[in-house]
Length: 216
Ligand code: DX5
Ligand code: ZN
Image 1 (tube, rainbow, N blue to C red):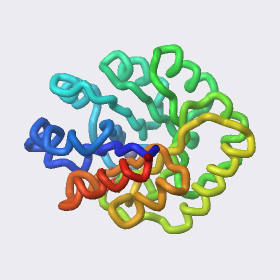
Image 2 (image 1 turned 135 degrees about the vertical axis):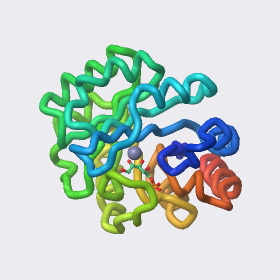
Image 3 (image 1 turned 30 degrees about the vertical axis):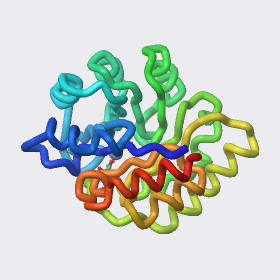
């Protein structure tokens, strides 16, 4: 069953509450892209944005930490209401410790991989995570094009999960929309993170219907 996680980076931020209310019937959770201008070339949201979201929605919220020192922020994001924390393999020195910490705080722990980072870097962490997020663009911005070769990476990950009996979820983030979301869901993806695909999509209700039907 593939769910839609709406990245508010692509929302009209002058009307955040209205934007979330507009798409709420069609989505399953909210995705908060936290960028520090070091690990990725853009600066975005911190705790105040999570607090703002929590003041009007009860939806699950994923804090996607694209920052050079994720450990410093894990606890605060969970305290402020993130139900999942996604940390990057590339910037976490003690991935197992960080994953355990997130789970001990009561949130789901996902590990993200940039497009050029091989799946083999996760061999030792697979048994411990709640999910793996495959970046299908280089992180930093909404509205980029899906990197086609990431389909093979997703298929490979799905095979690893099946062959080893792992229970982690598979998430994808970047360039996902009407054209590729259904096929990704069929390829075993559980969480479709979408920015433009949600907030700038005139056919969002049809896409949401289609994905929900695929799950039955
Ligand atoms: C990219 C972010 C994504 C981004 C997705 O670095 O992690 O979550 O907002 O936006 P779209 O779906 O428009 O590519
Ligand atoms: Zn993201």
